[in-house]
Amino acid sequence: MPPRKQREIGRGLEILHEEFEDALKEGTAEFKKRGRILKIILFGPYAKGGWVDEPFTMKGYRSDFDLLIIVNDRRLCDLRIIGTRPPTG
Image (cartoon, rainbow, N blue to C red; front, top):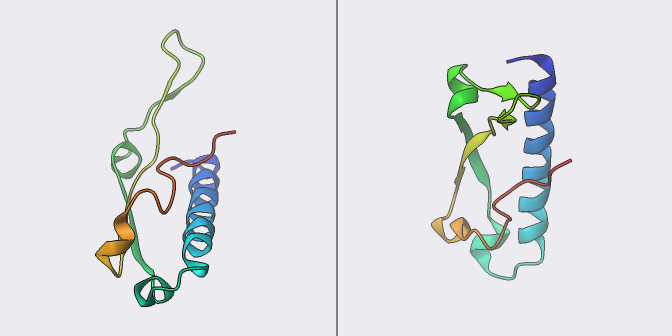
């Protein structure tokens, strides 16, 4: 993966961890107090080395990062706790 893409995914992971911590820090339920990200798995085109980055072509397509986040309690899997898409820009 090119260095620029490595930096992008690195920043995305920082944001993911920050948002996860923010979403749980005010929780009173014990499972939220103990909430942890156990593993983050990159899959899809970036994991396989077949991503597309052609923003200036007629289609203007760019592959996104596909991430699977494993947490320590299934009750933390509610997508309303953390947004489903990272901020753009």
